[in-house]
Length: 82
Picture 1 (cartoon, rainbow, N blue to C red):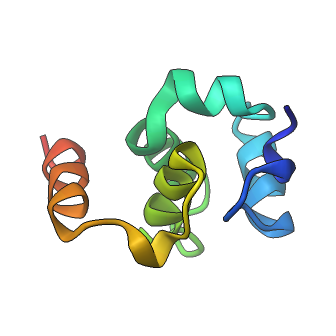
Picture 2 (picture 1 turned 180 degrees about the vertical axis):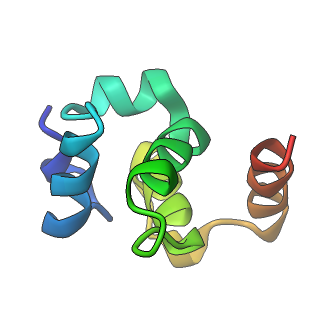
């Protein structure tokens, strides 16, 4: 499935993800939200915020980003900072 079809991934995010080589849901799942966030942050440092991380994780979970549990956000941040 193309990345733009995932809930929570808008056209701008889909375009930037494609620019870093992530064009499908399977590729996002393989890299993971944190890995994809790192790629985006390296390529687009001014554009990439933690909202991108939350959006990609929620897309993988097929839920709204606002519904991500605080504990999961903390785990993602710990992984990002390791």
